[in-house]
Amino acid sequence: MNKKQKKMLARILVTAVLIVILGQLNVTGYARLALYLIPYLVVGYDILLKALKGIRNKQVFDENFLMAVATVGAIVLGEYTEGVAVMLFYQIGELFQSYAVGKSRKNISQLMDIRPDYANIEGEHGLEQVDPDEVEIGTVIVVQPGEKIPIDGVVEEGNATLNTSALTGESLPREVRVGDAVISGCINMTGVLKIRTTKAFGESTVSKILDLVENANSKKSQSERFISRFARYYTPAVCYGALALAVVPPVIQMLMGGTAQWGLWIYRALTFLVISCPCALVISIPLSFFAGIGGASRAGVLIKGSNYLETLAQTKYVVFDKTGTLTRGVFEVVGIHHSQMENERLLEYAALAESYSSHPISRSLKEACGKTIDRSRVTNVEEISGNGVTAKVDGVSVAVGNDKLMHKIGLTAISCHQVGTVVHVAVDGIYAGHILISDVAKPTSAQAIRELQKVGVKKTVMLTGDADRVAQQVARELGVDEVHSELLPADKVDKIEALLAKKGDKEKLAFVGDGINDAPVLSRADIGVAMGALGSDAAIEAADIVLMDDDPMKMVSAIRIARKCMRIVYENIYLAIGIKMVCLLLGAVGLANMWVAIFADVGVMVLAVLNAIRALLVKKL
Image 1 (tube, helix red, strand yellow):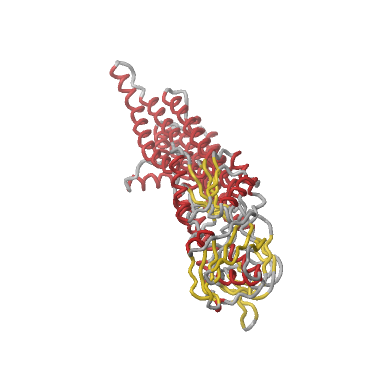
Image 2: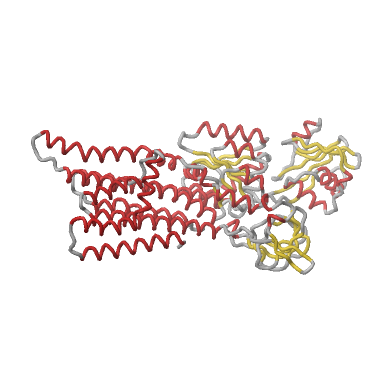
């Protein structure tokens, strides 16, 4: 508990003791009123001050006003014990709610405990700890075993095993050595690392993730906006309803020649006010989303706002990019066919022409070449989107790409009878052969497709720029419902548009890609999901939801978390409104007293808050 909560607990305990003592005293008249005002003011003075402040600021109708009117009214009617008890139990509910929110925030901060406290820099007298904000780009920092990597960089010296669980939700270690890029937030488990920073602390992965999680609450869901609007109209309505309940029946009784019974009807109106307090809804709904986002963070799923959480829960169509999303994206050269020169020379030409590209196919060509790539031998590089690359290597024109590129430069490509990605090569204007490269599906891709179908996803779709034969084989292997191949980036957007036009209004479409090359598609889908975004600034910026590692099962986890959170939200809405409506009717006809009102207000709020915290608990698949 913090100091404020401890102070409130002390006030509650003092008030409870005073009520028990006063119950044993035989005091009447103004003396009794004066004695009961002591515990009332001890426990409720802050509520009265907030109510007065709201009136002064012309923001009258809130729970503080309802509590103030109800309790003051009860005391005026001589119901001293009930007046103080209502305020006491209301404050108990507020304390419980404060503690629950604080607990959930603490849990989230522990789950996302990746903010580094310091960075080690070598000084004249050994290692010096400095604020990470003060470390400039290009500085060499030292990370010892057990310490967090404070800033993104490249390993200059040493090798170690890193724990990435705080970022990915998975405990699998990652081995790093000299030349490897490392990101902030990982924990060094073994060995001393010297890292040259490549970013300022404010631009590092850890800062971007923390900023994303901390600002998630600024993007409200439709449910939260509905509750805010509901409370804005509901509270004044019940206040006027209580006023009508206090005035109209006595007046009717007087007009009919009976006794007005003002005290009875005012008491019922005050009970009506206590029951109607919307605390359970106003508190538990945002808390449910907050807990859901926190639980997702624990699982390595970063959700940028409760609006995206709500949209994800309605997802019925999931569209995947292929390379690097459903497949490993680790290509290997498995054959060279129809070569007009030595295989090694053809590979060298292809690797050099592709040396400026970061595409997985380019990397596989460089690795298969087995030689140091000297980029100074390469000039006039031109990358043709969706086709390939043309360049001059040692002054010789080289074209590397698909059959579309060959057609573009006036050559006929020779088809390959084996399944895989075919990279055609032309040297000095002559077709020189093709290189066969294969990619394999990730171990969990097929399981992820099956699990998505189990959670109610109507259709899974795969989009790829790869050849149709390769795409169809991968789709059959994984069980994907629909596949579209040989697509340029603009074609992928068109396919998404067509799928969006076919689905129902309340059905949502999610696109899952790498977040770097698929930015247009990510932004066009109902919800864009970047997979395997560990250390990728572009992915974190482009998508609505970020999966921190490259396991397709994370998409299943994300949907399950979202649907669980939305179930909890609706449970709380039905619970709060249902019980309150019943109790309001009972209060209006005189079958509910202040003690029932206390349950309808505080009891329901406690139940709703407890239910909301369940969203923090996430089961691993």
